[in-house]
Length: 148
Image (cartoon, rainbow, N blue to C red; front, side):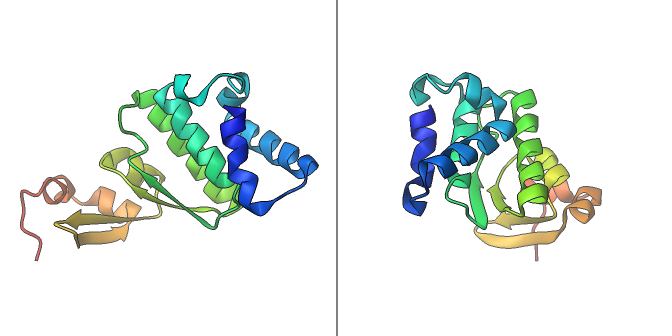
């Protein structure tokens, strides 16, 4: 897995020493990856693969990371762990995350803002707290109410 993780730094062309420091930082956020660093990435669990993808992206030092359905197929405890790490990365490193996610409860608990799309257009938007407080969010999200 570590070899796969290292590919994230390829475009930056950092020194060997810098790569090692960057990997150590990734491992502080994702200690599970450190314990599994010698296994093939394809043998990792879904949660570990999601952590690997985020870690690899972080090694490029982006301002923004797009995550598409990071909770898909994962156990709820792993989903919560990933969202907590994403929140910590946002706070500590200032990295922004744009997350396309169907699990509105967990995603809005960790978000600043949210957008509900209906047929490719924004049906609802607002702060995460405001959206969570809406009584009609579930109906709008599930498409039971027509958004004007």
